Length: 151
Image (cartoon, rainbow, N blue to C red; front, side):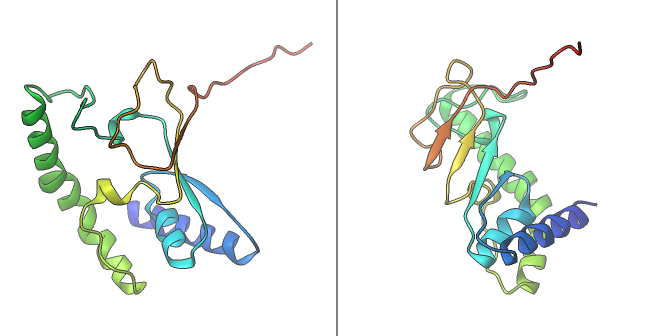
């Protein structure tokens, strides 16, 4: 299922790129969009609505099961990335990328932030920016739905 979504994202962003000048915005887990941007060279902004995907060794996010000193939290996070996130996601993603002629990804949580920029839809009071968050980075408040009553 994930492979199908990834390939549909890739094809959609490839089509937009071929139709003319284009810049995209996608969530960090839209691997198809990120791969298309890398392959075709159009700018892509990664959007984040959750601070947990912006890891900080200085002030780690509060996550269930993550406890102890900063050193221990960093160690647990790196182990989780290596033994869980990368082990599950990278084999199929890198196999697909190889078929496209792209280099393999070594660490998913570093790659999923676009080099073109990151848009955080997270207010500063909720998660203060940290020095090691990816750059360039722009912040906004939470995105909100505004409903109007009908006359």
